[in-house]
Length: 597
Image (cartoon, rainbow, N blue to C red; front, side, top):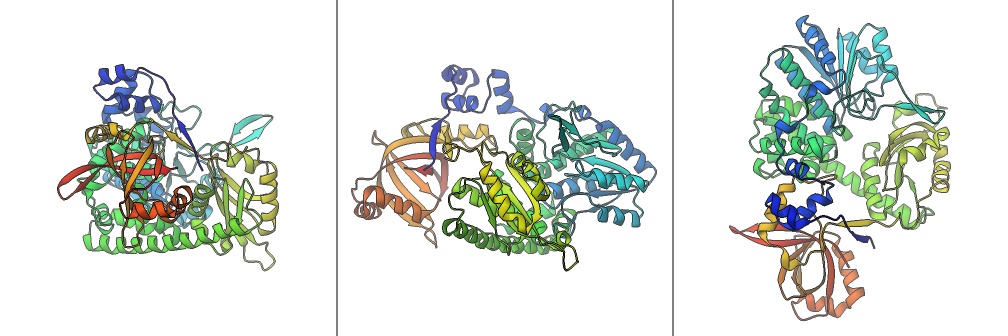
């Protein structure tokens, strides 16, 4: 069972609420999100485009734009090189469309995940040289391509980098020594000398900022750049960036614009997923629309996803979306099978008690290893690596070449994957990442040793291996109203580092419960508080596990009575998220149950 913890930050919530014209519960939510003064709270609640930072503050920002303007003036060929995920696709689209509007002779290349791997590589550079390209402009990659950029420079190319990933470094004598790049200009907020104050932008946001600067440089109306905000928002949520500061403004503004989108491709994607533009929120970006874009890069080529946003032909857009949705369905099924195989390996194998799970699934498609690792991490709440046999570009053509394994890891709080892998780097052919996620390539014969070393050096305690649920306010369900839930929307958009508010109440009676859906995978509950106030509850989690828990805690007879709507002895404590349910033209309060005991 996860440990429930109440956020205990102190402040005069009633006074804050009175000064800001909000409920004291909403005031407490603001404090829980780290806002300590009235000015930052007002900015959080009402910040807009006018509050975005000046793109001139980027190190090399003006330099990069000056070079682009010169290349455009001399009619030089520019090649945008992106990445195969949603951030890379949106970055590529923004730069292509923005540069085209400025009269540039521009093309786009996106690497193939299997044959090219991530980011700028020699193959893509040679293709650009063959096509007579003068300038390479990267987006969502390039900061770590030290050798590749040096190769391009030796062949007389101009190389411009826009990226948002951490700057690569060597650690010597206890100090970090950042690797030097020969790129002509590098725009990345993580550079030590960069004066841009907000560091958590995605690649598409960095690319967009450069288009804003370029428009200003060559006198294109800067308001035209606002058309890309829906793409920036899509990428920000899809790349799981923190929804704090500037990102929150970008996503909020992008969502407002997508409800009136002019993009033929975006409209086709929304329609194919059974939605309408007015409904779109962060959930749809992250879990409905975004996976369709990512599926192209996982199982086919992200070029098709890029073409979706390039086209102005409705029939072509519909055909591409049909392909993407089909690919995503295939990805879902492959993921389901992979997760089942991984769970069986844990439950029935020798690694059951390992604090760090290192699972070798040789037949799993390498593009979904990270998704499976995330699901297994969530299920067991342990750092998890999913490894699978690598494609031919890693193994080589020689018959005696060692068999290589590639994989992805997903971590938990308190365990830095990157640092732990650094301690095993003698076993690894390649690796990279950050505390919460990592990618590795190694020889198959080293998998067992990697598992042994990672577990032997692991310092996680039993307490750290217990998942923690952070509750905003222990709030009786009697206090919740539709008006209060509407007020919580002031804190949206919700996502990483700005989650939907979570509340808790205890000793709720269950007067009735019943199953819904074709597969009976939704549970509705009629709840009654300690003070006798009725409330409607809904649960979307694992229904069989929920029912098993209820039978063990309260007995099978009590569960059957509850299913019949008769008196029973069930009393639940729940962590819930309140929402408004619209049905038949009326609205009612509904509590989505997230956790129970």
